[in-house]
Length: 434
Image (cartoon, rainbow, N blue to C red; front, side, top):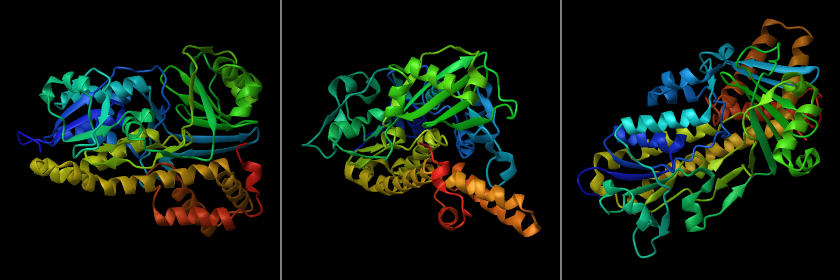
């Protein structure tokens, strides 16, 4: 049991999920130790936010600071062929969704959250945490001896709760040999930042562009002074593009007329980062004395950019679940904590599955087929009823893709029904990502 009247929590990892949870718990009186290995790669997937993130940033008190180094994101455009483009502006669907989001440089964003955690009273320990199994104790895992010794604030005692916020390292899952459910795609993503690019004149500043290539898809995420360009392709297509990430990204830009028009004269100013095997959800996300948040629990896909939202939302949900123990920390046994966060794990798993289902409609062509069918329907003449129907459909699609209502039963059922019966002869296969 805890001592001193405060819940004692060790958070492993100072990414968005770990820092956000540390802030929320410290504000409510918990004694939080945040283990930060100070590894801030210059490029991290998750540079574009969805509108549902904005209220969370406001609750954390970091939006004003984030806005200073980020670019406002007014919407998303899907460039599906040289003649077919679908543009969504968030403001059109206000107040159902927040009318804007941000494109963020992740190193600065992550550091801003970690700095806010320290300001909230979180004890930040600059060391990479290690875990050990604890077969003889009540908790499944404990901090390794050298990790415990590196945090004098813990006074040599194990914390009441260990939070795995180690991202794709999935530290608790690896130590406990917990498997993961892997998504159907086996893609690889290569991306880098460029300067001296030529912005697509058809698009407003800050608009995120998603393009379909001969194989896979591409993104253009405008930051304040740079453009993040990425490609997502399967392993065969990656091999055809080149032997290494630099060659693959350069050839992808050179071979795609639309990307070439943007970046042919641009200068790459960062290394080319690579991500693989990112559709992954842990089969268990909590147990006696521990819980996983953020990417350590699961990561869906870079399509639609849900990663940071899911990370921050998982932090909020865990903080809410722990509320009884923040008020009565002496009740915080490993078993009681596990029972407390289990509903969070079940609910967040359902949220990850809902996002996975939504993303699949872009890969298999149903979403873009629906967009084409709607465009064709409206081009045949629009009365008041047709316009109201089209607005209703587009609003519910936007509410799902923005994170506002991704799990809403009606919105999901509407999209499923339209994808099955409302395509008006448009074949999804024609719109699929190869």
